[in-house]
Image 1: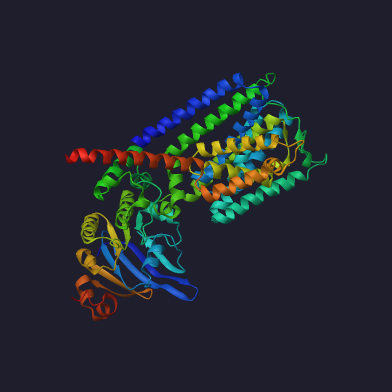
Image 2: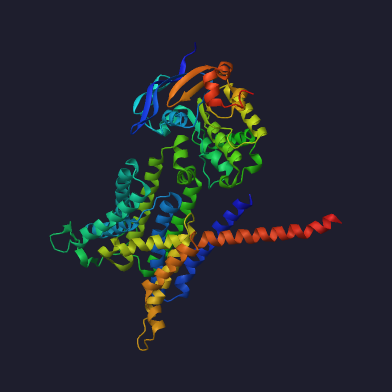
Length: 356
Length: 240
């Protein structure tokens, strides 16, 4: 019972902080800060998509960036062809989901083992990277949208209010939209994981063979959760293409796919809020380190601290070795043991009185 | 003679040159309780794996109420009504006891029904006090009970128990025997066990496996008296 009320408290806390952040940030911060915060929100949705399929579904997908990139490219291509954003947004979610479903069908129904699943998903995103990267010529176009190859697609038209082409969403609007999308994704996933479907997914992660012997078909459940993960990554990709009005093949690249996994490892698998915190924290840190470029004085330490990949690498290794469960689960464990220690002390304090 | 609930015809599985189970013709009537004994490596657990779809037979057939299930998936067989408690408890270690049983119950019962079944099973297996504990932290004997609760919650027609009394104290063994007899009032069971005292508490008919084949099949008293079985498989304690 106390576990459940703690759970509700956590949900309420996330909701209040999330809403407060959403309405206060644009009023208190400069526009360029709001622009930075927007990308954090978008990437946090991407982090949640992997938190779902890896942390809860037990599927280690090294190529979550494939669905992210497909979402971004699909939006861009559909937008140049249609010009009004309602349908492109829908397609940018549905197409990556369908691609995930197809890929997932072959992986799960083919009984591919976990390790190979990681290899295959990584390969898929790298194939997409190479394929899109080599479409630079004018002969590569879908309708009126040129793929642009390694140059990417610049000048992607922005989102508009559903079915009204004239009312484009501005930068502040993008912040509201991205934050709202993140909050909706978070609470939607909390609901999903508390449902019968979500509980069965966790059961399959815990013991696939037992789930089978109880009459559940793990292949179908894994396919479903993988497809949902693909759809969420696609949504993040669609928002990303809007944020910079630009998309390039690096979105499919190794750095991007590795980053998503790092967010989840640092934040903690088996939680939703952890990967969100991991994602925002690491992006903030990368930005802070990147801004710290030494201009004049070049002593060793300022050089080292200006090297963002180096610092991030050290952080990742430190987490894997010292905090393997990730930030949020470790803090939760710590809190629980502190509570228990206090309770024990109370009990011990009572004993002498009872003896009297 | 009642109709056969489960029947195997020339059931075999070979791992390379090793014939783990070799031409087994086995028959279980509706509502029957059968014990399966035999030395380690006799093929009992492998036999169970073929009955539940965890292993595909090389040859032969498994028929459940006349339906060929030799090449069915494990989840399809489970849905037909065969439940198994495996030798090493196969449970959801990271989840609580009640969540474990709920996962089993919710496959066959709608939401409210599942909650009721969880309460019933907790009581029946004596786990009500441990309902919120994480299964991975429980003692071996208790995890056996959790798995038994899981299997019972799916309400199967045929229950396979692979060494249900292993790692249990004397009282727990007696409690398990009682439960097995109680289950047998409505369901058929096949029980693999080494503990001869346990076998004596529950058994009517016993099948002895040896080197992948059925050595002998008889009433429990005759098996106990059978010199071949007694000398080789039961050891001296059973004679006393």
